[in-house]
Amino acid sequence: MTVHLGVHNANPSLYHLSRLGILEELLAPLGEDAVWHQVGGLATAEALRSGGIDVGGTGSTPPLSAQAAGHDLVYLAVSAPRPGHGALLVRADGPVRTVADLKDGTVELAVGSWQTHFTAKALAGAGLTYGREVTAVRADAGSYARLIDGTVDAWVAQGAELAAARRAGTVRTLAEAGDVITDRSVFFTRREYADRRPDLLALVVEALRRADAWAAGHLDEAAEIAAADQGGTAADWREALAVLPWRLEPVCDAFLAEQQEAADLLADAGFLPRAIDVSEARHPGLDAAVRTALEARP
Image: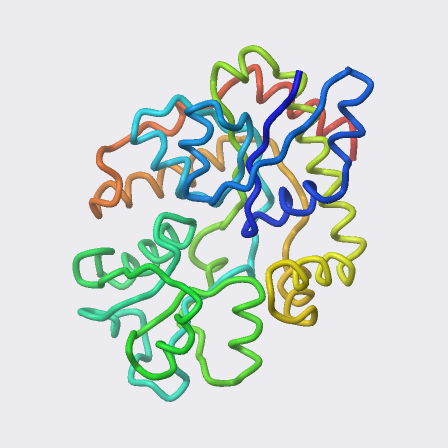
């Protein structure tokens, strides 16, 4: 049997695992194999629903959108919180001094990703509503330039782009993602797949754990891989990768509470089409298999 995994550049654990051969090594004694599919983070849920992939990983928002759309997905594992992973930036010499100053303004971000959760919660803390008092626009390669020339009021940056913008000295941090949300990587699968193959999924988690351990111990090499493949400098990538926790955790009540808070906030803002009960995306049997795998292999 072959397990199909979605991988995209913004999920460092899956990204490096897809290049290291660790999962293939674990599966070989079982006569099974892994196939990797390049799938954008926002397309992960649909790829899972359609059967194109069996496992995917994103930030906090995509699985909430998937559940609200009626997809029967379940959580597999999560990363430890990622302080330092992203931030809401404004021009260093611009007029925006507080989050409240963004009222009637425009923020560029990866709409639909964890950045939506982060931005919505940061705005809510200032009495503003995502998509109402503040306009959200999809970010792209020109976001930094538009922030600096004043076309937009703020930009959510992450990873090497965040490191590069800060090094240039032209931006100011309005809010750190880690001060607003826990900002975890989230790994999930289809419920029917979890019903059939909790053993195989536990091996996927073990492979992710080993890939994380490799990256944590080989930051220079990991940064060079990312820079050569995705652009940017190895120095910026190393800075971005060094702040990541490189540690997996089982699904727990605290994580589900975090997701429920995000779901309620996004439903109230109209980003999610309906309210959801996040606990319905928990799979007790899968939780037990993953917890055993993580506890048995420190």
